[in-house]
Amino acid sequence: MKVGILGSGVVGQTLAGGFLKHGHEVMIGTRSPETLAEWSVAAGENADVGTVAGAASYGDILVLAVKGTAAMETLRSAGVDNLEGKTVIDATNPIADAPPENGVLKFFTSLDQSLMEQLQSAFPDAHFVKAFNSIGNALMVNPDLGGTRPTMFICGNDVGAKREVSEILDLFGFEVEDMGGAQAARAIEPLCILWCIPGFLHNRWTHAFKLLKG
Ligand SMILES: NC(=O)c1ccc[n+]([C@@H]2O[C@H](COP(=O)([O-])OP(=O)(O)OC[C@H]3O[C@@H](n4cnc5c(N)ncnc54)[C@H](OP(=O)(O)O)[C@@H]3O)[C@@H](O)[C@H]2O)c1
Image 1 (cartoon, helix red, strand yellow):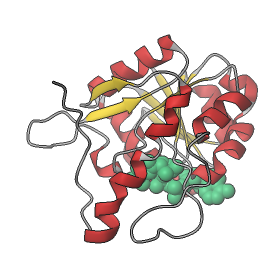
Image 2: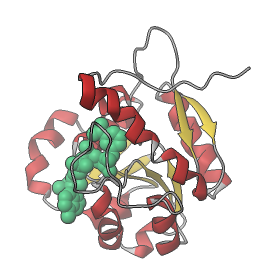
Image 3: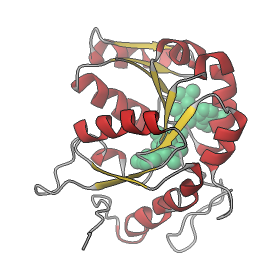
Image 4: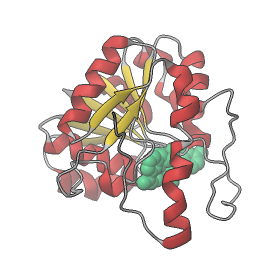
């Protein structure tokens, strides 16, 4: 599978590494491809770097891994035709520029509308699936948590896209909980706020969510 990753930050590079590890081909799309020349060489022959539009066109499946405030602009640069009919794994969080308060992040969205719903409504022909937003980058690929598979909460409107992302998450070491349509991102995005609190307050960043079911 060819995976186009939009965003070259720690999440973009970590997920690119995960897809490469599992035998896929990857192109990272960034505003400044020249800064990733070293990464591209180190990552091997199945890895490439290009523009945002280049990676969006390359990928059979896409990953959105940019700063939340830049998500809409990045997808516009990707080009609407390059998104059409594709699964877009949305790892972003709508974190505001204001600093956290007592370890609690501030969002630029409300509880009545998530970032992913905004993206889905702006690009109706893309199939967004929220995933990877509420776990730290160090635990995104086959995390070692003493034999426990952590839960990844996902949501999205397209059943086929969610099936595709669930298979990827299984490969990456997660148990998947499908929370329904895009509206459920109103609940999944704020899990990032909760996940970050122990980090900001106690410098603990190595936990993950697990849904226990009776
Ligand atoms: N860090 C984590 O552990 C973690 C965990 C879960 C979810 N997330 C979410 O994943 C996303 C990526 O996180 P990150 O930590 O890798 O990086 P980040 O610092 O949140 O974002 C940096 C990325 O945003 C892109 N970007 C595009 N337009 C931008 C603009 N106008 N201003 C600033 N940046 C712009 C940059 O792309 P270029 O490549 O073009 O520079 C860069 O790759 C975020 O939405 C974050 O909330 C992060």
